[in-house]
Length: 444
Image (cartoon, rainbow, N blue to C red; front, side, top):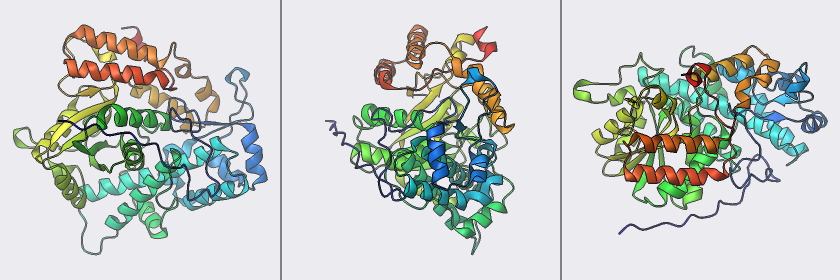
């Protein structure tokens, strides 16, 4: 007989870097601010005045939080700043300012506690981005070039993951679990690394992550207490995995292990993940210590694999194979699904790859590239006026259309369709923006 757990209320929302406590999060999303398609927030003039009175360095704000020029009145850009600038997508260049950025957050919390939620969120977001990008760089390095005696990278990676987890927790209104700034030695180590830096994570939207984790807690993990481990393929799902370390135990009232693997076929084609006989080369996915931890956690257990998005399903199939190689059972989930592929080819089917496919359409890589390109060029006008921010309808209507399409294909099981219905009902409370379709696909 399956035992159903009870969802416990989250613990009191506080933060070790914020003695007075943060602005109360939205109970539906866990976030105190609204994010756009990329996860960026807009910081209003009132909060900028508070920043000025708190003595925040204008040059640092200019670097990390670019001012919207306002040359196009229709864009509503006057007297605001954007939560992500060019350095967000060039994290290695921002490393020298990391400690100062953390000090800036502390000063804001002391001088204007709870009064600048969007600004505070943006500072935390940038701190999290630096820690996550740095952690992945060392994960990539240690996987391809295993550590030797007296190698400083393993200890640095552990500390960076702790820092990235701490900032992720704070972004979702949970207590910080560690420092926000890096160890000086770790910073020097990262500055010496040229390779392994990534431009952006496909899933680093705080609101979307919060909605996803609440859905998984209520509709997957509570009914399935046999699932004790979560596995997230990198790089796209890194922020979700780090957030899950804090948020899921708080929602469930029980511990849950969260593990990472480097695995992907769309943008990591140069890595030989597949071995003989359809196996997955585990040593290509993680440093030795993390491989050993996953092996121990997966054996004779059920593992929930969460990928940021599924197109053709190659990553989820490989992750399932790896879990089974390690002696476990896999339940696979996509946070976004490329439902447009169904429109383009009636033969495309991922029913065997995604046990729990999200009805969310995926934010196509061409749109992500265009939006991040505006920010990398410092063109705030182009970013704010981009048509991607004005997609028609609502996300919930898009998800309903995805469900109708899934039913029409006739390839999904009764259990998969039941999970989709549960997600669609849960999504009625989500405040994520609708997902635009690329022009080429919209015309197909």
